[in-house]
Length: 387
Image 1 (cartoon, rainbow, N blue to C red):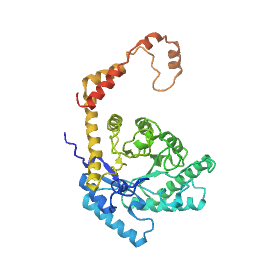
Image 2: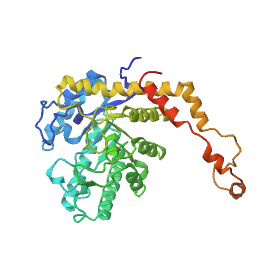
Image 3: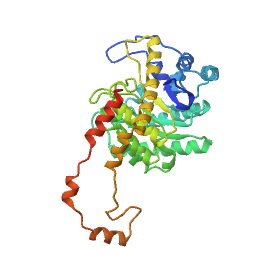
Image 4: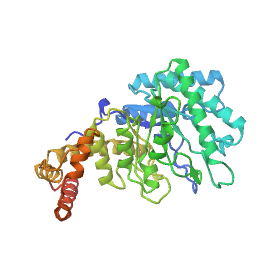
C-alpha cells in the first residue's frame, strides 16, 4: 500500500506544532526557533496539505504595522511556493499576562474589550490568509477557585463575545465558521465549556448557532476520561463537526499532545473509521508535538508519522468493512426478523397502541447471546496484521 499523503487527505498542522521548540514546565527549549516561512517549507517537504496558526504564531504581538505586513507577505509567498493553504486560524488569548484571568470571561472589562479587539484583528488576518474556519480555545476561560468568578455570569460573557464576533464576521462579509474547542482543565484548574456536550448546549443559546460548531481534540476529551469517538459522533450527528484536532493522550495525564495513534491505536482506528465511513470532508488537523528529544529532522519524522498512521488506519478501516466474517457478525448483531411492532419514523397513536399491546418474550431477549467478544477479537487481529 502507498501511505503517501496527498492533498485530498487534507492533513494540516499548526505553526505551533512543528515550530514547537520543546520547552516544558521543567526544561528550557531544545530546538532553535524557526520562522513561519521555515515551518511552511518543512510542512511542504513532508507532504502536508495546509498550515494553521494563532495570530501571534505568525505576527509577534508587539509587531508594528509595517512589520506585520512584511511578515504576511513573506508567509503568503511561502504558501505559493509550497502549494500549502491556510484552512483554519485562531487567536492566542492565553499566553500574554493580560489574559491571566481569562479573555472573554475576565472579571476586568478592559481585558474583555482588549480580547475582542485582538480577536477581530486576528479574524481579519486569518481571512486574509484564506482561513474558512476560526477556532476558539478558551485556555484561560476558567478558575482555580469558584470564589473568584460567577460561572453563570462567565457563560453570559462568553455568549456576548461570540454573538458580537458572529455579527462582526457577517458585517465584514467573511465566509467564516467558528469552532469551539472544549477542554476540561490546564492551564486553568477548571475551564468553561469543558467537553463536547457542554459546548453543544452552549451553541444553541447563541444568536447565530448556525455559524458555530465544534473543534474536538483527542487529548482534551481523553483528559476528562471520556470516549473521544462518542463526542465526535455526537458533534457530527448534530451537524457541528466543523474541524477536528488529532493527537494522542494517556488518560489521567497532563495534556500530552502525542503523535496521532501513538498511545491507543485501537481508539485511533475507530475514530478514523468513523470519519471515513460518514464521509467527513473537513481538515484533519494534527495538534501535536514531537518529543522533546528530537531535532528538526525528528520533527519531520513526527509529522510524517501522524499522517502515515492515519492512512494506515484508513486502510485498516477499509479491510474491516470488507471482512466477510466481521460483516456477518455485524449483521447477526443487528438482525431484525420483523416480529416486533415498528415505532420508528415518529409518533402516532396507532403505533403507540400496537406497541403497548404487543407481548414480548422477555426471557428470550435476555437469553440471546451477542458475539461482541468475537467481533472485538477479530478487530484486534486485523489491527495486529494477522487477518
